[in-house]
Figure (tube, rainbow, N blue to C red):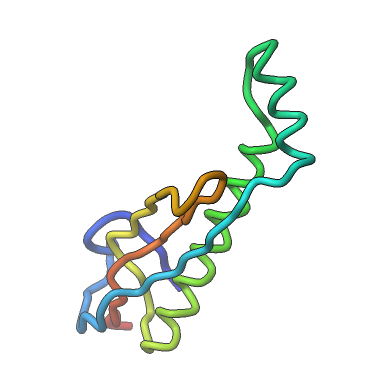
Length: 105
């Protein structure tokens, strides 16, 4: 599966647009990470626990988007975007979405 943030795949011709492929996950902070984050907040710097949580969330959302595109019969997903929104205090949704397409092989 080719994943791209661009409208077209260089060297490939799009033959059909199958629709929007999407994948999301909602993640909440946990008390263990909050304790370390609170300490880091005092001294400053990157809060690595949250960075790792966000990276894992993005990867899971992307995998779910690819799975959705595969169900549509896509060869690629173009115009891929990621968004984040808070759904409640301490929990956020990561959404990955793009255009599922068929390519001329």
